[in-house]
Length: 239
Image 1: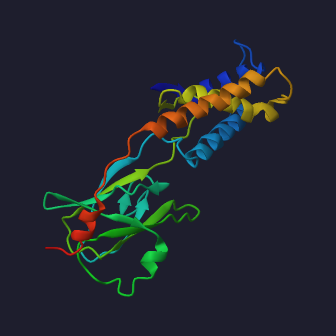
Image 2: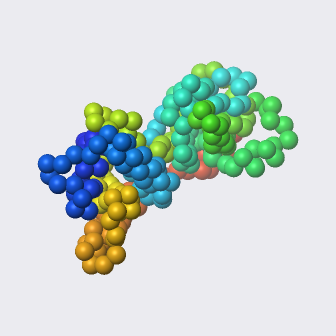
């Protein structure tokens, strides 16, 4: 894994463009602008297929009679608001793991009696985003009838961005730093008054493309977890 500050990433990217010498530094205002561009690039990669290495497993205890839960900072599930869920979640009840399906909000809205209680056999996710409140909502069907069941979430979280340019470091997966440096250089080029046309920067453009392709190729080869969906269908009613 690679640990690096935003300033180091920005300076490496600018040196790829030939606009920052080894002994040179940027002024504070310029650094702040490049930090915004760098974070925007990282955020956009969070939305790209296969740019995130793996899902993260988290656990939350359900509440009897409560069908919907906010998820995000200060929410019912007080954690990072996920980009999406993987269809590999389960509920642990009495020491047994019961798979739970991920379905669309349209399916949930169509349920005529949302007050039916039991062990949930599916959930739907509404990734709300209200300014200042980064919380989504998870809806369960059936409505949980136990306050001891634990929901194991398999979530895809955004790639970390930088809050500070000088002191904060982020651990990136192997190959990620190279991809960021080369692609950030291309992102920075218009702001550094660098024309990317011609042969001069062809190798940089090729390296940037290949670095991302390598990450996606590796992530695509990761094994998919096995799941027996029949078990979920057989255990919808609590016994």
